[in-house]
Amino acid sequence: MKLQTNRDLIVTIVNKGWSERVVKSSKAAGAEGGTILFARGTGVRERTSFLGISVEPEKEMVLTIVSNKITETVLQAIVDGAELEKPGAGIAFVLPLKSVAGICHFEPEATSLDNVICD
Image 1 (cartoon, rainbow, N blue to C red):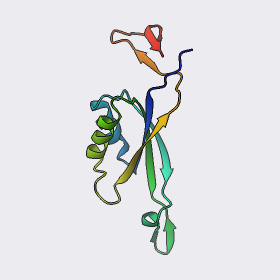
Image 2: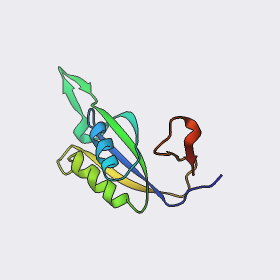
Image 3: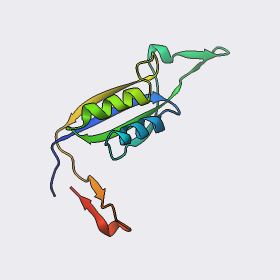
């Protein structure tokens, strides 16, 4: 198995309903997709109440693995698409990945899983 060593993980945490913008923006900038996870916020801004009951807003976390050659381009597309410059909109950060296994790519003419290339 060939391990990939030139990859970064872009982690984006946004308010519920914004993850699709993150994925759409990242794909437009060259990423192949992302994984969406549901989360909850515990920061100072997230502490709200309704009728005296504490409410923890729901968040969505998008994990995007990209080649380190396009990391900055994809990150900027996410910042723009998810409006992360606005206060309280979310956060994005990059973690370098030491090695990655199992990244698969579909051939453009693929019609089944038989035409998949895994790095």
